[in-house]
Length: 138
Ligand SMILES: [Zn+2]
Image (cartoon, rainbow, N blue to C red):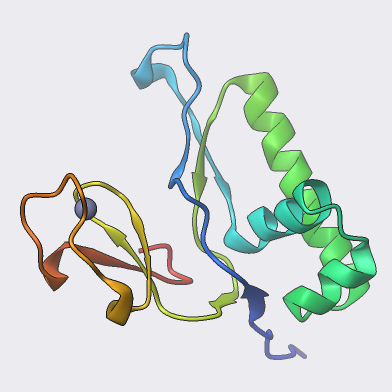
């Protein structure tokens, strides 16, 4: 018996695609994944300082689910910190408040196709440079 998973609400994607430790050769880096919903739980609880009930409501999940997401997020971050892993932030069962894109060239975030303006440092401008950000992490 499986219940259909509800999409967890995320206000906006993180500025970066992930984190890379320095002081370790690139080829020796192991990668771990922090899901978008895990990132959002950290943002709401530790950065915004929300209480778990408030964060759960904002993400449209139950309080126990929020707690599980948060615990997994902290586990992943702790592992990355201790083991020196690269952290990719992507994926998860999430729904953004609108369509988000990232510029392929300068990695700037664009919220909604209609808000796409020429990047300051990008010579080429067009919709080709927009990478959609979605639950598949693509
Ligand atoms: Zn750009």
